[in-house]
Amino acid sequence: MGRLGDAWDLHAPGDLLDLGVHRLLRLLEAGVDRSDDAIQGELEAYNPLVPDGANWKATMFVEYPDAEERRRMLARLKGIERRVWVQAGEGERVYAIADEDLERENEEKTSSVHFLRFELSADARAALRRGAAIRIGVDHPHYSASLAVDAPVRESLAGDLA
Image (cartoon, rainbow, N blue to C red):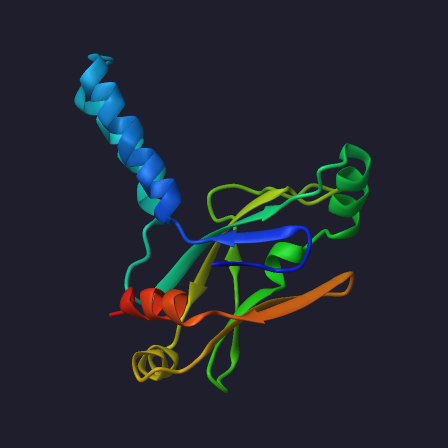
């Protein structure tokens, strides 16, 4: 989806889904556990990453190459996953629903990886189908950034909506 500043990447689920499909195919080709349970397990791992036509899903990586800086910033940025937003045109900001599969934050820090879901209203989806611009951003007290999504990515994201 885009890069928000020096330490943040947001990715749509396509890369992760491709990874899951390739992993499943490798398992089948290698003859590794072809049972229905093994295949079902792979599907259950990746199905939650698929948007349903009324939402977008993304993986957020908080990347600091230096281990000490990463430790310090992950402590400082607790709650950042709930302050990521998308906006269709001049509409309301839609804040992420984060980490539905398990809690990734603890008393000391946030995680460097978060799974995000953005539930878009019918009005937002209609605006996007009509060509509204998309902005994405973060408005945490210790980190603030936003960007306009470029046209090819905007068209792809809008095409994912029902």
